[in-house]
Length: 145
Image (cartoon, rainbow, N blue to C red; front, side):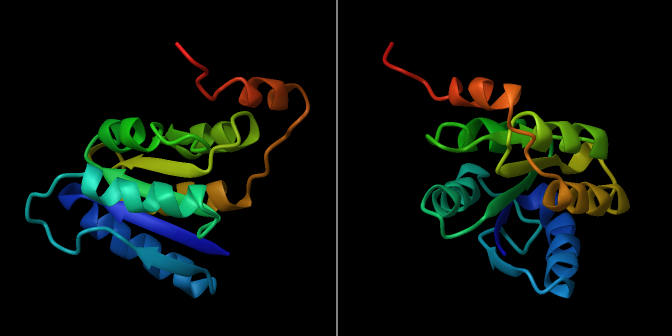
């Protein structure tokens, strides 16, 4: 499995903890995030993650910023990305089961690292249910305006 991860300055410590978890499971991680707490612009770290997922260079993406709103909005501009903003493992489970999310967006300022590690585990271990949810997922991409 391959995961691309991106973060801004609010998510650096979270990213390090997540990468450690993923690597302990022999998951290949591509790090596009900042390794510093110096202020940066989150879209710069979202675009390469979204492109990796769209181009099948990663199975999933993980994005972290203060509220996760900015990273989710940016990632969801890409056709084929289904980025879910999640703040607990129950929401993570539903976004995978019902929405087939392929990018997990984490709000660092509203979660704790142990909680986030459980969320990542849930994201990776939860399967899309398909069935009645598939027709809804099929309706997500924008058509012409």
